[in-house]
Structures are given as structure tokens and as C-alpha cells.
Image (tube, rainbow, N blue to C red; front, side, top):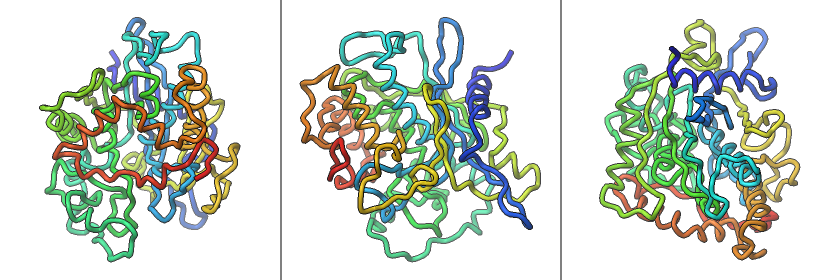
Amino acid sequence: MVSLADRVAQCVIDRYLKLPKRGKPTAKGTDSVKEEWTVLAGFVIEDTGTNELECVSLGTGLKCQHRQQLSRFGDSVHDSHAEVIARRALLVYLLDQLCNKESIFTKTTLPRQLDTKYKLHLYTSQCPCGDAAIGPLHATLDTDHLPQAKRRRTEHSDSVIANRIVRGHQGFDSLGMLRLKPGRADSIPTMSMSCSDKIARWNALGVQGSLLALLILPIYISSIVVGDLFDHSSIDRALNQRVSSALDSKHMPDGYNANECAVLPTSVEFERSQLVLKARNVDIVTADASIYWQKGLQASVALVNGVKQGSKNDKGQCQKEKLRPSICKLSLFGQFIAIAQELMPELLKTTWTYKTIKQRSTKYQQAKALWLDSDQFKDWVQCPPEYEAFDRTGNV
């Protein structure tokens, strides 16, 4: 009998294989060919009544932007790691579901609630970067020959990094630490927390985030299914134990809790994973592009440097609506506003910004404050307010 974990993994991979080639990893070069590798992640809805599985969003990717690359207009994606891309596509799906007569939500009044017959699973083809991956990486890498950090002039926080936050692949003896992307110490640091840290956050506050928390109750992951570099104790420590210890003595608002997701291995291989390609003895290189897809989208969308592949990101002005990724903050804000105008018009004022609306999500902000007050997560690097000061049209 096929395990649930293998079924979840296969469900995401099957959906990925049906998508067009644009943005997917491929062979690069002519004389010396190198095969691109990436990470694939996806969210799967399980109907516990019928045992049917459906992939509702997915993403691929390995890149993220450093501060000098960020847009103040919310029109690009800052973090293009697969798990983050898949979750942002999930938000679009959840917003779409609020408008459907046959939806995964039960209550007709706000906030809506996920029908109890549904479970949400997260698949990732490789162990999430950050604290969850420290054990398996330490076992497989020659840590004496990892690149050392170079001195760089950066606007943000070498002091923060030196305090309680570690660069991705550094400090293998420091377990339970918050970590910044990217992993390589010789690369430019970013303000993006590791995927381990972000999934731990979802276990505390739900995958829906503060914006959607105005419309729906928290939604938690039932299980995470991991392919390469699986280490149950490391993943459980990073995603579950850190959260439970952080919130142990906290009185969270109604609906919020320290979720404990099942940590499951899968034997199903993703053809473009790093370990699968290495086993073929081919030269490999990280893929530059990401893709995202969610149910309702006819074809996947390719991203490079946080914008749609082929489009230019003019840092001095906001991208036109048709050129923006539908998973960027500004696009999600616009979709939220369109729905909220119908469901809760009393909330909206035309002058309110993305940040202002998020702050209106009172219970979410209370839960977040309690979570950030913990020793485990108090040094979380938050997005500077100037990057969330845009209104629904992208004006700042």
C-alpha cells in the first residue's frame, strides 16, 4: 500500500510535470553542459472523507533578493525559495476559495473556517533550508571547506547576524538558531529568514498570514513531506519543538496554537533535485528561474529575480498590473481588497496602506507579538516598514 507521504509527493510532482517548460530547470551550455537543479514544493489538500488528494499550489526556486534589490512598491517577490513561492500561490488559491460557492470553507460568516474534513499537507523535495537542514548537511558536507564570509558593505545588520542569527551554512554546532538566506557565507546577505524559520512561523500563526486572517481563521499544516536530506529529529526540532517551547507558557488568542505537523519521509524522487542529478554523475548548477502555479491558473508563471521572466524591474516606478506576479504583495493586496469590499466593506479606507490593513488583523497581531516575545524567535528580522507602505495602486 502506498504511504500518504508518497502519495502527497507524487501528487505535487505529477502536477509539476503537466506544466509547461518555461522557467523549469534545463541543460545549460554547449561545450560543457551543466544540468540545472532546483527544489520543488507544493501544498496538497486531503479530503479525509474520500481520501482524495489534490495539489492546489506549487513552486520551485532557490534564490532570494538582497536589500539593494528590493522594491518599495510590493510588485516583486523578495524570497523565491520553493516553499515560500508555493505558500504565496496558496494564498491566491485561498482568496479564490472565498468567492466560490463550493469551497473548502464552511462558515458563511466571517471569519471563514476550513472544513474539518480537509487537511493541508506540504511537500518539499529537499529538507527546508536553515535549522532543519543543519543535521543532514553536517553529515554530508565537508564543513572544513565551506566558503568563509567575506567582508561586505551592506546596509543591514552585520551586528544582527553576529547576535542571535546565523548565516545559513555557518555554525553547525548551533542548533535551534534563526538563520538568514542564502546559505553560502560568500554571498550577499539578505533579510529573508530561512525556510525552516518561516515554516515554524506557519506552525505558530498559520499559513494564511495577517492579511487573510481578517477573512479566515488560522489554517495549519497537518504534515510536511520531505524528500532529500531527510532527518526526522532535525526537522521536528526546527519546525515543531522550537514552536512548542516558544509558546508553552503563552496564552494565544482563540484559534491560534503551537501546531505540531507530522514529519514524513518520501521515497518518491524529484527528477531535478540536487541529489538525483548528482547520482547521474553530471555537472550541476543552481537554476536561475522559479515557477509558481495554483489551482485556477491555466499555466505556471516563471520568475527571475522576483519578477516575471522577460520583464524589467524599474526600481524607480511600480510595474504595471499585467506585468506583476500574482503572488507579489501588491497583487495579493489588490485581490484581498476586491474581496473585502464585498465581504467587509466597513474595514476599508482608500488611503490605507498594505501595512495598515495588516495591523487591523488584531488577533493575528496579538499572536505574533506573543511569538516574537519568545527567546526562540525574538530576533526575527522583520521587513522594514518602508517596504510595506504602498497603497492598493502601488503608490508610496
